[in-house]
Amino acid sequence: AQSVTQLDSQVPVFEEAPVELRCNYSSSVSVYLFWYVQYPNQGLQLLLKYLSGSTLVESINGFEAEFNKSQTSFHLRKPSVHISDTAEYFCAVSEGAAGNKLTFGGGTRVLVKP
Amino acid sequence: DSGVTQTPKHLITATGQRVTLRCSPRSGDLSVYWYQQSLDQGLQFLIQYYNGEERAKGNILERFSAQQFPDLHSELNLSSLELGDSALYFCASSPPNRDRGGSYEQYFGPGTRLTVT
Image 1 (cartoon, rainbow over the protein chains, first blue to last red):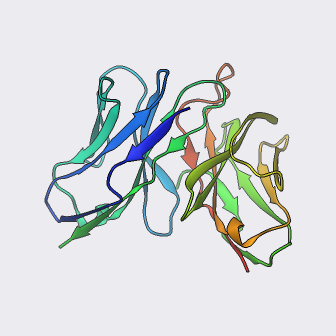
Image 2: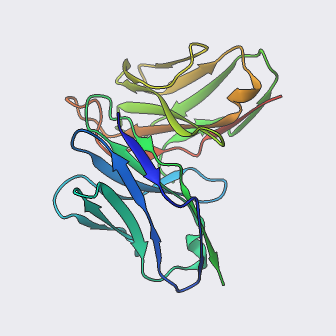
């Protein structure tokens, strides 16, 4: 069975500083990886995804994530955060078998301080 | 706005009661997924429907059931409610892929917050 571990439950960071959110997964088959963001009192928004091809994927708002198969990781990074990046971030994995269910990590709460 | 709608936004009810949560997927999406988000369990997959048929089941209690109608909207029915059922319930949809029962990425609605008192 697949599982996802987000190593940090909370990450405080100053505005304009870099941030890295760590995600490791466990699966016996090929996986597809996602990062979702949840702003306060809102639903989940797809931030970026890795399905195949280049292991480095980018979002439109400056986030990037790198798929590392040997380390079974999919860490999320942003070189310079804004106050508006304050949110909870979820890493998710799908094994791609019939059903497509997403298995989520426990989430990392990012608090950007001025 | 993801294009997935959920009603109601908030629901407060008593233990032992039954409620129905409703979801309309994005236009053209055939798959609907239900997830539960709670403080102690995190985000957990409940069930998936594809074009009206149940496709996959997760950690869904026997007291819970779901269906997808011909117009593709879905309802999640929760009965004999307990305090522990208080949670945020999300619906998600994904574009069609006949072989896989839906494409890889899922788009989430705003959720229904259920409070059982």
